[in-house]
Length: 275
Image (cartoon, rainbow, N blue to C red; front, side):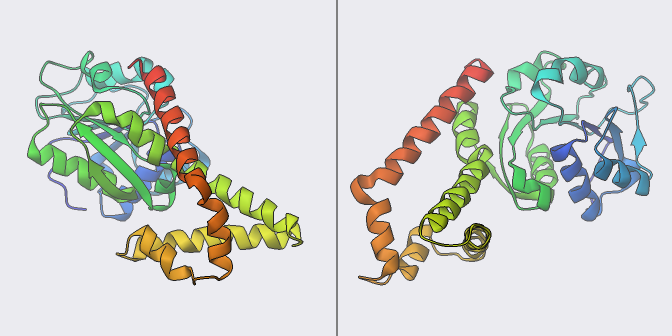
């Protein structure tokens, strides 16, 4: 990954998401010498990556000689105020602060940075761990076109990237894609339990449900057809799939349930972020 960097990329937090980003960026050609990691106890998998690439680690950034090109904030939201300021004091006029901390607003970072600093708030989801994430980003008014492209390239290391202009929509984004993997996993649980109720061996039913949802997701990802069209392609009139969908779609019950679920997640996100 050939990036025009004016200084190092500081990664604050090398846990699951920070480690996934580090791994993804290195696999795309980011030079280890361009990265500095701050994490007192990275997971074993990330620690091995850091060691294998001889990536620099720092307990503090007091000896940093060049303003960072990017401060990637990947620590847990509740400790961000303890960790971010030590890096923020080194921000230069061209530094991009990129946060992947759920619920932390652009304003919560701006208070630690010089006026006019470029800040991008990003919301990835857990499939980023295997390079199949979905990240939505929102930029402060001071983010340049070049910095926006840089943020896109960085987050593309773990999956797809989309942008929104209104930060207030981040709670809805979190409700759909940030929390969304849990909904898919619960679908697998429900299908497996229903298979057992229909007479299947529990292990076989679990395998069928898991493989079916995983395979369907892969098919959706590789197709340019809308989900509704793919659903109709599986559904023969009067067949078994149609009989099941008659139940799932009766009185629009499944859609209405998801509207309620997404609304509940959005509301909770607003409460946590103080919106």
